[in-house]
Each structure stands twice: as C-alpha cells, then as structure tokens.
Amino acid sequence: MNAEIGVKNSHSLKEVGILTYAFGEERYLDYAVNLALSLRLHMPDLKRAIVTDRENAEILAAFDLIIPFNAEFGWGVAHKTYMDRYSPFDETLFIDADCLVSRPFPEELQAIRQFDFTPAVEEVLTPQDSNIFFHDLGETMRRLKLEEIPKFNGGVYFFRNGSEKTQQMFSEARKLTDRCHELGLRGFRKTGPNDESVFSLALSRSGFHTFYRDQGRLMRTPLGMHGPLAIDVMGGGTRFVKLGILVQPAICHFCGGFVNWVEYRGEALKLRTHFQISEASALDRWSIGCRLVVMRIWVLIFGRVVSKHELRKLKRRLKRKLKNALRRLILRR
Image (cartoon, rainbow, N blue to C red):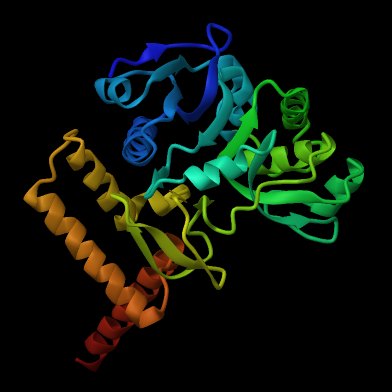
C-alpha cells in the first residue's frame, strides 16, 4: 500500500476514516503501527491517517494518508484540540496510538456516527464532584457557569468536520487551553492540560449535552481493573472487570504504563508476526510466555493486576525486610 501525503483542505474524503497522532519519541510510531495493523485486520475498509513528524517504511505501509505534524499547534495531548485542522475526512474517529483493536466494531461505529462530536462518555460531573485534573472542579465550573460536564477517557473521539457546532467547540477548546492556569486545570506531562479536561469544559460551553455511551463496548482502559485482562487481538476480543463491571471493548486503550504490560507487548508481537513486519524469536516467545505465567499467578494470589507504583512499593518493602534479616543475622554472630 502506498501512503499519500495529505493535509487538510488539500482534499476532503467524503467518508468516515481513522485519525491518530504519533510524534516526539520513536516509541509512539511503534504504537501507531500496532494500532494500524489491528485496524487493518478488523476494520480494513476504513482509511487510516496519521499525523506525524517523521516517516519510515512501517508507517508508510500501515497508513493510507501521512499528514505532516505542525509544531505551531504545540505539543502534548492538548494537540488534540487541532484534530479538525488535520483530519481529511468528513467524519473522523480519532483513536489514540496506544490502543489495540481486538474485534470488528461496525455496530459501535454506526452508533457513534449519530453525533456531531462525542467521546465515549462514562458519567457526568457536577460542581459538587472532584477530579484529579482540576485544582478545584467546582470553582472552575462556577467561573464558567456550568452545571455539569461529561467525564470520559480521551482514547477515542468522533466528530463531523462539516458541523458548525463542532467547529465552535474546537475553537472554544483552543481558547480554554490558553486559559488553563487561570481556570485551575492541572498540567499533564509538562505539556499543559490534558485533552479530557479541556474538551469536557468546551463541550458543555458549546451546548453539547447528549453523548455516545458505549456500555463498555467500544473503548475502555485497564484503569480501575480488577482481575485478569483477557485479550486476543486476532479476533477474540477483550474482556475485563472495571470498577466491578464486566466490559468487553473492541478497542483497549493501554494508556500510560499499560503499554509495558505483557498483554500489550504480546498482542502487538502477534500482529507484527501475522503481517510479517517482524518475526517473533524463540527468546521473545519464551520471555512473553514467562511474564504471562507470572502475571496470572499474581492475579490468582492477589485477585487483581497491580500497578507499577504498587510493585515498586512492594520491592522497597522486600528490600527493607531482607536488610533487616541480614542485620539480625550478623548481630547474632
């Protein structure tokens, strides 16, 4: 497949397509290729476009359209407030690069296309609530005269580029990003506020009150997960218990450190081997197999997968116990 180099307004594809970002560190390009391969496997009729600051053979083979990164739009996740400037499609499903698709999702896509702009909303927040991305959510909402805002993960967004209401919302999101400190939005990865906080405010300010609710079927992250994560990127789907509810998303968003989990690495390797992008060596298979066994034993013992932070705390505790035991042994001698 030969990718085209495109930018907004050079042409408009009158169809729904997939857009993702990969710029900065090299690993983001690897994530984007993994996402594209999973889309190619399960939703092959959807065109795939990527905004990137570099190209390589894998990117050119995995995507239909390569869109040059514009540094004037800034860096970090707030760059998503310019999705409308980048997308060549009339209807766009934006998917974060660190996602994997594990089954087709035509029904979910049809449902989300009924909206002008929507993430996969999980709940709504009021001024009485709190949120880690705001210093004081209630104060921010009172300043903007908002009664409620949607809460969601920004792993997916759907929008129509021809909608005047959508364009107003994007414009409002960019204005709010410039006012992030004044409005009490917390910084995210040293590049400004995160996209979820900005879009939640902009959506409410622009009169968006009805959103797509996927019931855990389109996209979810492992955040808040208890028990094992079952995923088969070759078509078996994804399932896990999140906040006490079984979810079965077509798209699993491995945000943050979750890309280091053996589930992500193992499934990405499956995709690359299937499409003959890279071969799985005997050492790779052995390493992934061992890590899976350890993860499953851990889940059996503790009932859930723990975070990297919890693992670090456990290691420090074990080191202290070992030092104390050695000290006692020396003193006895």
